[in-house]
Image (tube, rainbow, N blue to C red):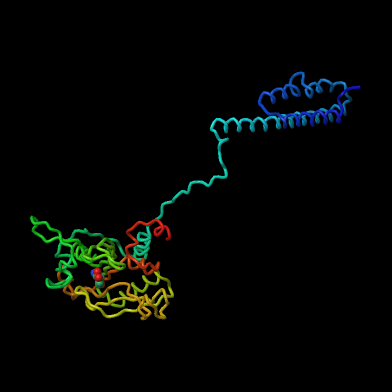
Length: 348
Ligand code: PHE
């Protein structure tokens, strides 16, 4: 009676798979492979008995044998892969991996809160069609003050407020610009209206450091000059700005003020973000906080730069970037922006 029946094949199959499963080395796997699938192997041999079977059995048993060989080969290959991985691990000393150790923390770079607000402000005005202009931080006294209608005896020119450069050989008096408004002068001297620009940049003042003062900070200046520019245009643009910056539900108001280079001059307030207008210590119970200065460009300033003040009018505004960031994120000390304390700058 031939060995070749389903029961025998199934026993061989099970025995073989078990041996493969329990193998502990590549050499063992090779031995098992030869034992069962080699030319004289226990499974391979059975193929030689097929011709002794009836046609029907031959087909059935033949198929079963083929399936069994395939299964055993797959299992062998799978085990082989496992051994290979173990070898790679050994080579790289992965066996010493301590998976319960806590890993190293990776610190991901972030945009500084001040830059974030800076870009946000600029983007709002780009959306309104303003272009960007820049000017130097070392500025002529003439542009920083004189042409802006700031007279010689104005206190802002005082050494107490302004950082002058001590350059004796230089014919012109130079200083670190105290605001971005001199860029208005530069733009109007180099371009003809219509002008519709913002001028972001760093400014300097002779200040003692305290929670609301730094000796350098950032401003974004705005200027629009054309025929028929009116105060309502200024109000519209700035109202759009604060609603985009602080939220569409934020109330704002304009108050009369004074700047030598604008007439009329205004200051813009927004509803206090801390108490939502109810009154608190931040807004000194007024419900409003100041955000920026603005006004209609003084006709004298237009004339100073050769623009006909009968034909053209304009508005201008200047806002402090640090101030906007402090209001938006309720930061109560301006010095935090420059200390680079990781605990602070990662909060935004
Ligand atoms: N330059 C003014 C300041 O620094 C702000 C300002 C700009 C006001 C333009 C009116 C118009 O305070």
